[in-house]
Length: 247
Length: 222
Image (cartoon, rainbow over all chains, first blue to last red; front, side, top):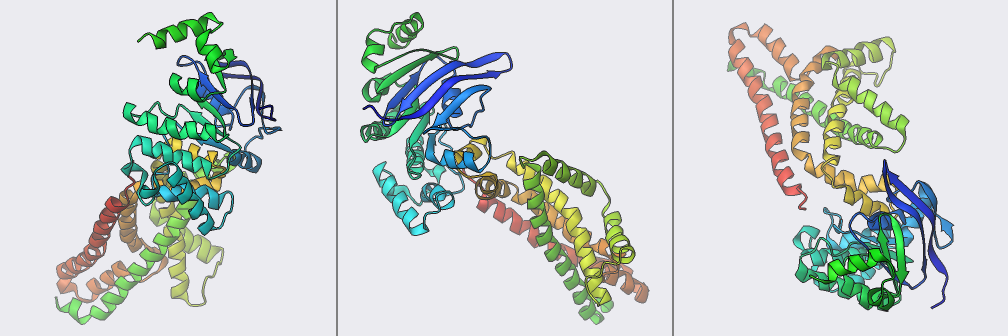
């Protein structure tokens, strides 16, 4: 898997006042790669994830997607965002639209696909994530796990080059976590480029090509799942893993 | 009750004018109100500032002054003619004044509605690649609108009653007819008052009920 670099972060810094949330972050995600970002709360994982499609601005450094540095606001940024899928912790399905319309909307209004083609694709994707039967319902009528699967279908409908997952299972009841992780694992297997911020270590071991460990706004170490979970090199990672794996 | 029965044709005609003023101004103020709301949340500071100044002025000026301004200022002084027919001209001047005034309240209602829409809705829209106008038009404003149907109803009921001030630009709506009838039928002042009051209640009560029903029906489940 020596493919092109899809996402490149070069010396990225961000501060919230005194709080330095991202410190000189360098990260490269290759095409088809699944990168899982883990680390303690407040490490800057979500900020990093959100910065990649500029839901968070950065103070210095460069973020490039597929060779193009992130544009400032405007049409070019909108076009780039259409190529970068995003799955949120709180799903953020459009509450006034049906499940089907949630998946159709972006295709019609951003990609300008004909309506019938968009509906067909949406139905196909909803079937793929196992919610084809719920297409006419509204988001509030679905369980959290189902909503998150719709959100994944909504992102996939745009044929994105990469999908960012910002703690996709953190807001779910425990029994619904697996249904979402299964969809994500299948995506990873199909070769989708993914950046996943998560606390699900099982998923990281199983699906990741690379694990990135962050703490205090820095990337402390990165390695293959076996390498990282088997023998973390940094003290921060060792103590983090000791804490989460002993209970 | 004699007077109201004898004059029922002109009373209905006067109330019909009230209904027309209300309906057209309501439509106008919804359109202008949406536009103002969009300006108030626009990425351009100049648009935000302009809309904010407009809303502050329109909302804090008495309606009588606004209508006198459209009637005397815009109509008589600046000589803006919207129709050859004086009555039609006055009607449109009144519509402009009522719309200018009411849209400020519509804007404030919609803006408070926007605040009830979780920020994640706009983030999800933007991350799909929707721009400012489409995010607002397809995602956030429709949800904001649904959450403020009831207050919009109150604004529309107020508008219905505010049309009585159109008399200052010479529009013969219900209250003008009432004054004329009181002069003609001085022995039936109380009956005439109650008759016209009942007319307004008959107009406004169903509006209140309809907006209440709509508000329950259109509520967004989260």
